[in-house]
Image 1 (cartoon, helix red, strand yellow):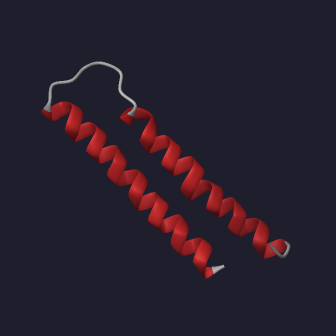
Image 2 (cartoon, rainbow, N blue to C red; image 1 turned 180 degrees about the vertical axis):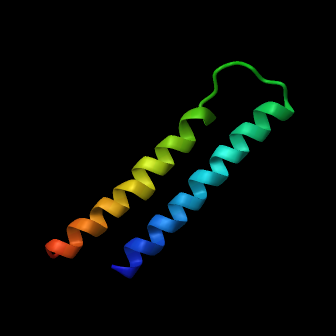
Image 3 (cartoon, rainbow, N blue to C red; image 1 turned 45 degrees about the horizontal axis):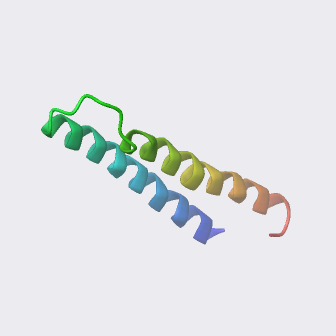
Length: 64
């Protein structure tokens, strides 16, 4: 259970770092087009952090 909490926190930090990198990188280069970096932040947040929190809730009720 502690491992899931730690992994979820790590993914949340990575998602925030990816969002800051995307914002500052595109702003620094004056880039206005579409980039794959815009999809990186929500994917890491949802697939990493939120999925692991759901797995944590499930592991509290049933053995995984």
